[in-house]
Image (tube, rainbow, N blue to C red; front, side):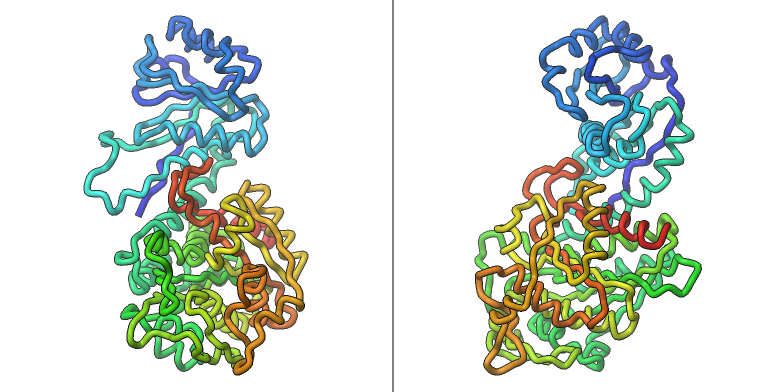
Length: 492
């Protein structure tokens, strides 16, 4: 598994800057005015820094953007990254600056002189998150630096900054855990190995249970079992409990779709792009990352997370279009399309979570529909809810973390598309409003009085190009937002 680069905060020491070997970064305000550190660097680089900040290239940079000066004369460092950033940046500007620093690391140690009066923790978090690289499947590392990336921040108030950044390591571990799970190929991350990785969270104080197929059959989870019946990988449900609050408050429930590979089943997907379906367990990956972050930072919160782990494969035993399955709730579902499998998995897991834990609220995450990508692209997850308070709390947290999320409507009128002639409902409602009808399907498995939010993350879980905080591939979207939301709900 990928480990985040270590971070430390130290006082500004001019002599150490000159001797530092690795990659150097310095923040300069939009005015281009150089402070004591800047003037020292300018002398060492024989005026190169001043020439750059006086240039049109610097003036065109937005707040948080950077330009690299390679092999600067007078410094032992191999590069000097000049980051345009004022003393009191916004969260977005600070994270953009941190991402520029992290992107430039390339596996080398980094010394960043940050003169900001606020936002240093955001800079550090962004630097660590952007430094991520998934290399588990590579025989050779892409960098030849044996020491690896590590970030040292020289700041005006290192002790205060270190305190403000106390949770950086825990959050980065959570995001990296999610990214590693989503990036892993399906022959490596089977339902069994996924469950094993989640069981390892018990070492951090998370209580973990694995429900096997016999248990699921006893519970009546035949919708979930139907999805996985064509695969040789056994279907499982993993239950993770974090009880960090010093009271008996009911937990918040997180539910994750964990389809480790989705061929579409008998309703087979086109071959082109099917390799991307290793990420169809993205919802379960986010849930796992949140739980790891909560445990590492010893969050004062009660959270239970449940993930349904299945593989959707075509075989002689696979579920067929036209089959009817009975859910744990007792409702029957006519399976029109076996590629609309995620909602069948979630239906049983959501019902079980409510029956067993009586949660104060429930949030499910799933790479559920291609329709959400058509509607929102790769910038926003789709948000659906039956409760304004819980939904607004999540949207507020997502906005604060810069993780795009957009609420879409729901309503009884959409239920007509799910009407079945032979069962209580169909599992698809046709092309119109495909993401909404999927949410309406899930709503039937939310008990009266349970606040619920459904997050369709099909467009944001894995990206084909770099984002601000991640290279292409798994983004880890949702870990930061849910962590913030939980912090606000439980006060710790």
